[in-house]
Image (tube, rainbow, N blue to C red; front, side):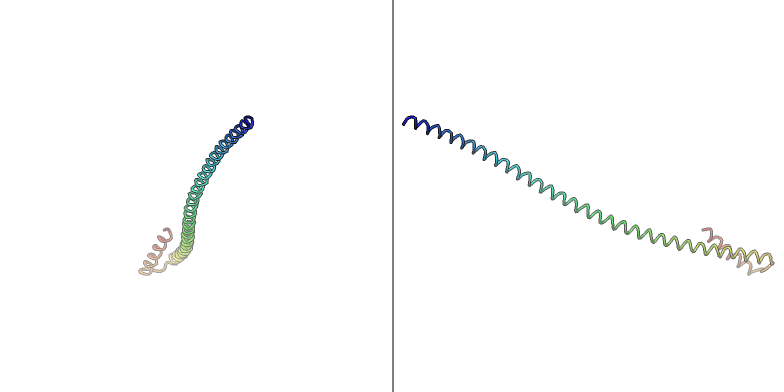
Length: 133
């Protein structure tokens, strides 16, 4: 009887010890699960913030892209305008040179006199001034 009772008491103490250890293990695991859960929430928040940043950057990039396109359009228009001005300038220079030749020929021939020569000189001066502009 007494030996049996002692053995049973030892077994009860052993089982109680295992129970305490198991309870502590469960508490420890619950703590780990909670920590993992908090980490997961933090990562989710970080992910949402990064998505927001990415969307803002994408919008900024799109706006910059449109701005670049607009600037290219302006540049092309200016280029065409400059090209047109260049052609106009060449035409004016050609006219000016032709007028100079005509003027030199008329002077060498001693013609014309009076009003017509004054009108030609005015036209010539205007073209020369325009050609220099």
